[in-house]
Image 1 (cartoon, rainbow, N blue to C red):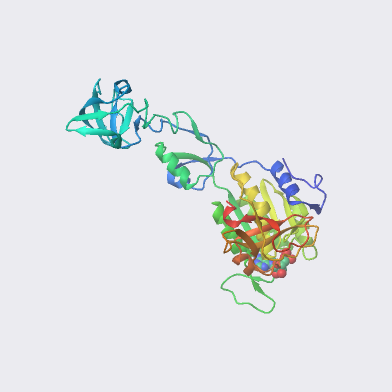
Image 2 (cartoon, rainbow, N blue to C red):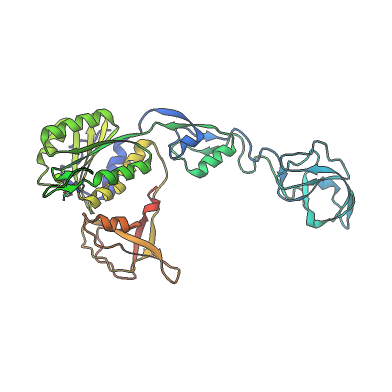
Length: 415
Ligand code: AMP
Ligand code: MG
């Protein structure tokens, strides 16, 4: 599907949910797979389901240190005497058969010997030399882990779309899976716009500031495991912007820009974009981060983020990141949200959803609480840096008083 200017009104005011719905309906995962060694699959998205090539555990084994025997030998009452014929250790199975009236000393994890079907814990027997006395109080199959009890051969263990975690690597290793087929990495190019911006290493003249958005963008993209193409700072000139758009669109699956999308300084940026592709300019009913452009430049997906440093981060996390996950083919891993009491007052005027920056912590009584991380201006990166969560206040909400419950989204849960 192609986003176009007919289906969303120009500069429409959209809720975050509407923007996400629109994006979700517009994008398809990139094509292309790679075969990777298991470790290189960390953070990558599975291109196919993985089913287990083996039973886990692969053989019946003991869950306890004790004696392996035949349940048929267990007495109805009193005790029975069994002849000890050998030992089974983990990795060193007993190769013989356990016959009637016999038992084998067995350790946790050792393969259950042929003939045996039950393990009796060592604490529950009496041993006299090579004779083991067992009581009546045991169940057939006790303390035996059956083959395939954890995972049966052929069972799907991870589905296509799964972004592999450290636990997944271990799980696949336990199945003997040495390679994984993963989606190819998404290529994301970005640049900043603004005549006031200087790159690190340059000297600031009057009225100039350092470009910080390329650093926050780098960090957020790096965490997603995408290929990053940093195109630097582009001056506020139509020809330069147009050239950068062409270059970015040719090189990447996704092009992100920051700045120049707010009303006023951005008119010719808008014109250039509209002449090169199909771009919708939106006003998102969120704070910070009102202006956002979304569209296509050829086959390249385009997002124009606001220039204010906190606005560009908030729109990235709330809107761009879900879109990138969709393009990466990732399915089903949702960021965590919690409801906790807020211990500070939060100023909020009804109208737009607020993504305030907060600090989630336990209070002295062990209750999880959140407080504001400081001044909430969309240019104040220090309070973003101090924060460990967004405090999400719905559009209709007004001020929050201490003790009110609020919804938070931990940064650590932004997957
Ligand atoms: P704009 O969206 O271009 O109107 O920019 C809005 C505000 O964000 C202005 O104060 C810009 O100086 C600032 N800004 C824009 N881009 C960046 C950037 N890459 N790094 C830091 N601040 C920026
Ligand atoms: Mg600007």
